[in-house]
Length: 131
Image (cartoon, rainbow, N blue to C red):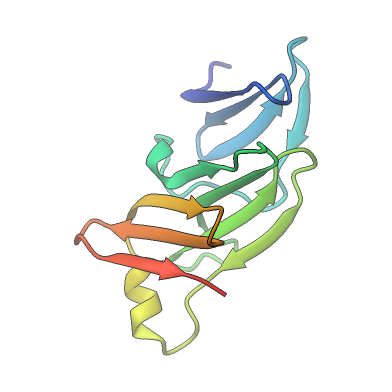
């Protein structure tokens, strides 16, 4: 099965592959070494504008579908090495600003120095997610 896209993780000598909203990690022997417990991408065609890999290549941050079937996406943070879900950003009930920020996300960036996630949507709005 050919992936629709892949990213070579040179620090870990692994490949991160994307196929039909799914993410997996493979080694050079063609063995799947990681599957993700809660990391189903929002876009079926693997839009890598919505995916960020940290400089240490240990985390993946992506715009994902929510497991509860919500019409809104979420920002999911997962460990690349073990597939564990570390964090998830969802719109809080009744918070229209957050709902609008998580609709039709077309770009995602993580500022590692400031620990902030930036998202942009198809309406041209940018949202900063911070602690």
